Image (cartoon, rainbow, N blue to C red; front, side):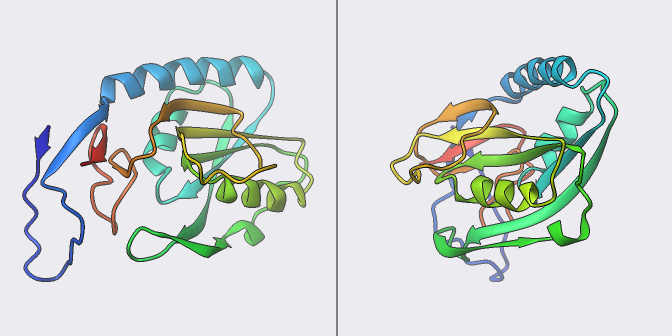
Amino acid sequence: MVSFFIKTEGKVNMDMDFSNLELMISKEEIKSKIVQLAETVDDEYKNKEIVFLMIMKGAFIFTSDLVREIKTPFSIEAIECSSYGLRGKERGELTIQGLEKLDLNSKHVIIVDDIYDSGKTLSSVMKEVEKQNPASLKSLILLVKNTERRLENIALPDFSLFEIEDKFVVGYGLDYKGYFRGLKGIYSVE
């Protein structure tokens, strides 16, 4: 159990109790899985140049740590997707920004995201990327949430590091209202 003191000076309304966060996945566990994943990616993409398409902001820490382990030539592009409102609750619509500026035609694209919940984000991004005719398209997801919210007939991740319970999590890029991204592990909010 980790306790946090957050000085808000009246500027941030934390409507969830973050006084006790429970460690679910340690930084050491994450590092070990990333090294294994990088080896798999290097084996699969030998003699190919990869474009990592990072979904901001949640995937930036995961992507950063992953690419430092990759030996295959790569470039990184970023897009922003959102299906969450201000209170961390899922909205109906999904917005994708930045994809229209990219040329992914005939490239080996790997979408990198922090969490797979209903599957709507990954499925929507994959459909949009497919319109650009990439040479190949795969996905890497840090966390796959066991949830009943998962949509039917939706894209599943090609690679994932961890499967977790249906809990609200923060840390290692995952946030609540922009906070807690910098935690080195992944914590559930109790």
